[in-house]
Structure formats: C-alpha cells, structure tokens
Length: 169
Image 1 (cartoon, one colour):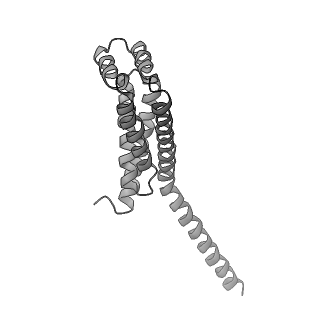
Image 2: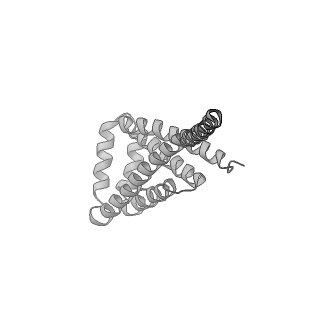
Image 3: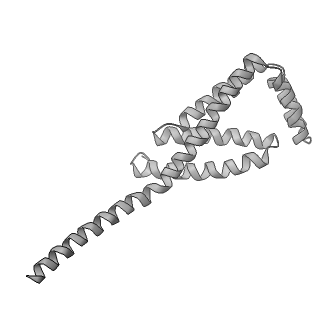
C-alpha cells in the first residue's frame, strides 16, 4: 500500500512541478515583452502628453516656439543650419508647424505605441525614436540618448513578441 500511495504523491508532485515549470516558462518568455510593452506605454503616454501641451501652447502662446529656437541655439551653437530651419518653420509659423509636428506627429506615434498590436506598436516606437533622434540634432543629448537606448531595446522585444505570435510573416 505504501508504494501506490507514494506513486500517487510522486505523480501529484510531478504534475505540480510541471504546472510550476509551465507557468514560469510562460512568465519567463513574456517578461521581456511585458517590459517592452510597459516602455511603449510610458513613451506613448509621454508623446500624447507632449501633443496635449503643444496643442495648448499653439492656441494660447504660439510665440513661445521662437523662444525655444533661441534656447536650442544656446545648446548647440555650432549648428547654424538647424537654427535657421527652426526660425523659418517653428519660429515663423508655429500654428502650422507646431500643430503638424508637435500635435499631429506626437499624438499619432503615441497612439501607435499604445496599441495592443505589436506591428503598430513597433511603428509607434520607431516614430518616437525618430523624434528623439531629432532632439539629438538640437543638442538634447542627455535626454535623447538614454531614450533611444531604451526604445531600441523595447522595439527588439516587440519584434520578438510579434514573431512569437506568428505575425512576422
């Protein structure tokens, strides 16, 4: 009688171990993609918040964009072409350019980054990375470089998630 009871316990133990192993296996494979989704949520949320802030500034204080051009010029004084581009676009026509880039673009990539679909989320992360690369040109290295590193990692995790789901075809 001892042997069958022992086998039953072993069988139950094996079943419990298999369940624990399977659970940890799923959690282990999804941990990276879960963290990548969290990064996408934070980055997407920040872009949407930035779009909202730009919407308010375009309506209430469009002249602030000309002042930002001066601030960027102080950050990277060696880039005259960038200062000229800023003054001809955002500085001279903030209601057009700030609406297009600061509201439209930021909101679009933010919404894409928040998507449950990994393909759309990947496009959103790429758009946010392109925006951060633009900040590099303006001299915001200490802000943009860490974000680019985190976004690259999150994009890689999102690509793995998309491939696991069979969407990479």
